[in-house]
Image (cartoon, rainbow, N blue to C red; front, top):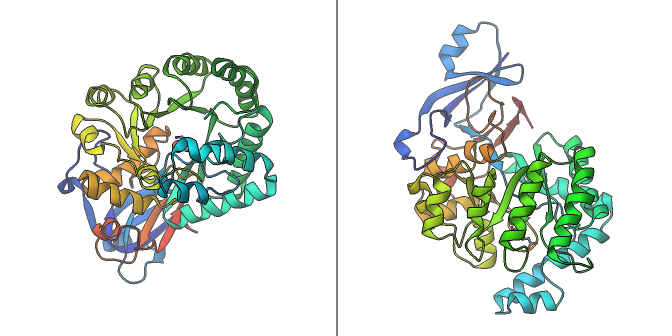
Length: 407
Ligand code: NIG
Ligand code: FE
């Protein structure tokens, strides 16, 4: 047993709802609080002095100066296993070049596929671990990581095995997702449907056999996979026992509806979602994930998070960190900016990066601070938790704890 404190504010998020809008008055704050840890889990949150006197001779990890503590963040959508760099895509896009022009001059997803295929396993593992360490430094201790830059059996398995290796070398929780359906690779001879069939028969059985991922993702978009073929594919992956998540409605509406129909855990992007489909999503248990990093990377509009929350959807916020559309990787900055444009409350933003994104990953043991939950949390040297979003990412995390241990 160990008592960590005192904290000026312990923001537990414990009583907040899974779906819909939340006002800041609903946030309960334990002032002069502490966290009692037992067996690496949270046993109790309460007043520091009271917990200290109730637990004589307990080990105390003293917090110096004024600090606040929040549940650690959960980034439920990233593509951080990749080779190469697409700074030239970014520059060309800002110079007015179109998607097609960028692809024709050697950019786009296909260029990341080539760089990732050509990168050594050591290089991919090293850069993946560096990105994981950066996310941990922001207070993010649960990180989804997609494949999707291999796009054939050998290279998709290479990516997923590297993600598994990274898990052995980090205390953060990694959640691998198979995104072989990111794009039909240029060297695949056959139709989209044939490529999706190839994933089902050649890739996913091996993913299962080696226990490399429990989740499957697909990019449904004019430039990638079409709605009908995607729906057939997703239903088959479900039959194979995978959970589903979808890159939906990024530029063209329609695919979030498919995500809901197939019972996906989440539909991510949604920048182009129409009002009717917002209602449809809001009535489902499919998490609507906003990816403000992609809007900022591409200069496109934001996900209509306000409308989704008002309609009652479960709204998560994730970074989408990838070399193309979302190169920044700083979820805290991105979520703070989304809040100013979409008019989201502090409670809604914090929920979106914690227990709501955890729900999208089927991890209901985290994202709040309360009895029996995973002891992952982040502290800041400040007297007011509002400063975390107010400073838009420039207030650095002071300490990050995983399973009750400072790392
Ligand atoms: O989530 N939209 C498709 N996939 C990624 C982009 C990947 C890339 O450009 O490399 C996304 O934005
Ligand atoms: Fe993505």
